[in-house]
Length: 118
Image (cartoon, rainbow, N blue to C red; front, top):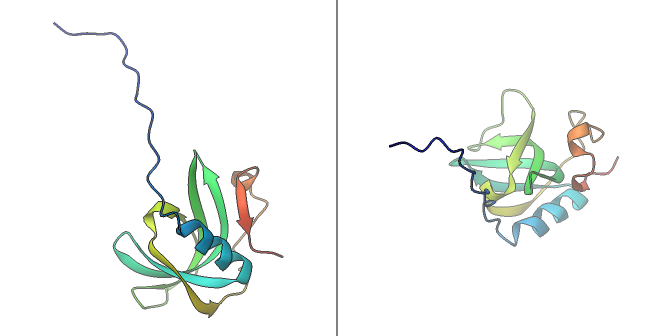
């Protein structure tokens, strides 16, 4: 016998975020310093431009400056789930605000915790 009654989805639990990750990203954004971490099993160095929330989880948008020690073929602004960047560490490498970053985009409205200054 099958039960055709609709089933309620269990609420998703956000992935745990290293409690030290948020202050690292905030400091990096304010001082315009790059961060390094492993993301999807690849070592990345990125210039974090904004920290924001989406669906209750923290995200960082930044320009990847190196992946596995090599510069990318093309600079792009990428989105990274903060919980996926580990171990997250600040570097001494400075960055300038990228023209790829558009802080006025609707997806950031009301969700921004910190962004690079103009």
